Image 1 (cartoon, rainbow, N blue to C red):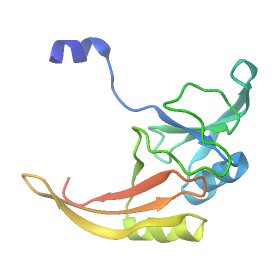
Image 2 (tube, helix red, strand yellow; image 1 turned 180 degrees about the vertical axis):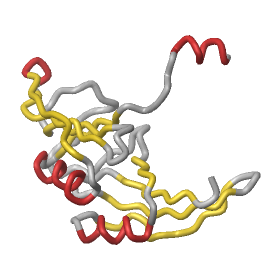
Image 3 (cartoon, helix red, strand yellow; image 1 turned 135 degrees about the horizontal axis):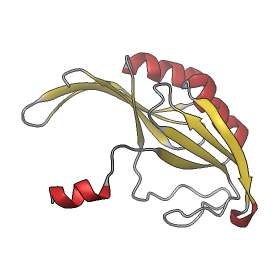
Image 4 (cartoon, rainbow, N blue to C red; image 1 turned 120 degrees about the horizontal axis):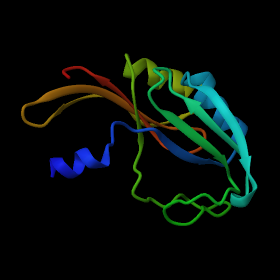
Length: 152
């Protein structure tokens, strides 16, 4: 198996793409509250994309790509209809490494997110590791986990 893995050449996660119900509000949440910066913006008429933005993480190692709600970008499942609840697909949440999961949670809530799960401490696996985390729903609706690694 390691031979196949080496041939594929994966060395990291580049980006996660999000369809925004409100493009400007979503970009603003990730930049003003979570500290991402706008790397570049574009449109792509052949995919009905009027607004796209690549947001760079504070550590510069990954990106979040934001698309307007009308974009016809390859995705799992179908688009959410107006006033329809989200349907759960394979992507469960976005996890961001933070220095303080409680502070990240509080600042995200103050910035327009809503609570999904208050800050907690988890003891996981064998050998046991301890992590502190919290989860919010962004103003756009995606679940964001704030993970403060304690024993890694």
